[in-house]
Image 1 (tube, rainbow, N blue to C red):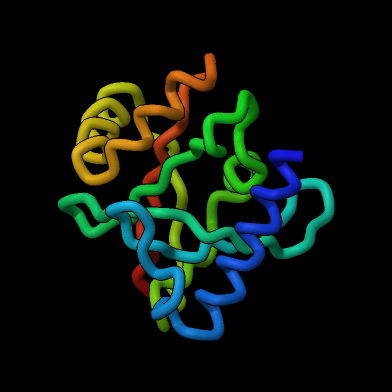
Image 2: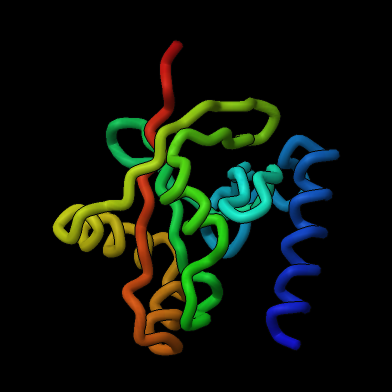
Length: 142
C-alpha cells in the first residue's frame, strides 16, 4: 500500500514539474528537484523520476537513492547501474549526464552536506539497514 501511494505521488510530481518547467514541484524540503530519465533495465522503457538534488563544487548534480527508507534500492538506481549515461531535466533545461556511485569517502562528505541542507534524510537511515547510495551526475559537455 505504501509503495502504491509513493508511486502515485511520484507520477503526479513528475507531471506537474514537466508541464510547469519546474515552477511546480521544483523544490522539496530544502532541495531543488530535477527529473531523472533512465531506461528500464527489464522493460527497456524510459522512466522519469523527480528527485531532490544539490550541486557539488564541480557543478555536478548529487542525488540520493533513499527510496523513502524502504529496504530496497529504488528502481531508478538499479537502472542507472545498468546504463549510467542518462538525461536529467533541471527546470526547463535538458542535460545529458554520466552517473557515478560515490565511493565511501566522497559519499560521507556528500552525505554530511545533504544532512545540512535536508536533515530529514537522516531519518531514512533509521528505517533501513542498507547503505543509502549517493550518486554524482556529471554533465556531459558536447
